[in-house]
Image (cartoon, rainbow, N blue to C red; front, side, top):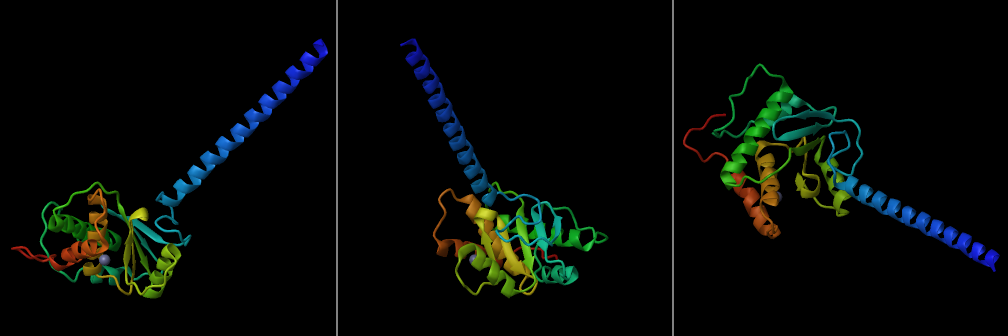
Amino acid sequence: MAKDILIMKILKNKIFLLFFFLLTALLLSISYQIRSDYSIVTISDTNDSGSPSKSSKWIIFKSSHFTVYCNPTANLKRIERKLRKRKFYITGLKNSDYSRNIQDKIGYRLDRLFVRAKQILDMNPRIKKIHLKIFKNRKEVKEEFFKIYRIRRRVKSFYVYKFNTIFISEQDITDSVVAHEIGHALTDHYFVVIPPLKVREMLASYVDLHLEEERILVE
Ligand SMILES: [Zn+2]
């Protein structure tokens, strides 16, 4: 009888150990799942952040409000020129120091567009640095759009809230297009309940449309 009890005890212990093992395995797999889900939406400062694509070679630089990823063959001077077509006045940003390098100049111009977009929309949402991915051409942007949404669409640029990223190309980048996409970023972060697409599109276009509306116009 005592032997039976002993065997029962051992069995119970084994069942308990098995149960414990299974529970641990389950918990580990859940936490792994959470972490892998999380890693999809996390934007780190590494090369492959900002989109599902794992393109490894980007020129990366930062400004106050942006992390910019340029394709390695990008003509930065050309990009900077294309971002300087519109003339508008803003307050609250220090004057540009033209002795700075081309990356700083691009960053400074983007920051100006960002501040101006906030003024136009009168929105000041909490938003982390926006990722700006500048691909070589529109074809690559279309490919990126397909990778994310699995839809083929003719797009010049787009903003994805989940990645806080603007996707654009060297071919199509202008301050007007970037201002429009910044408008999307701001409105997406501003509203608790995201407005319908048409309203968001209208607000983003509003930024582009009203960039210059000020008394004093400077570059
Ligand atoms: Zn839009």
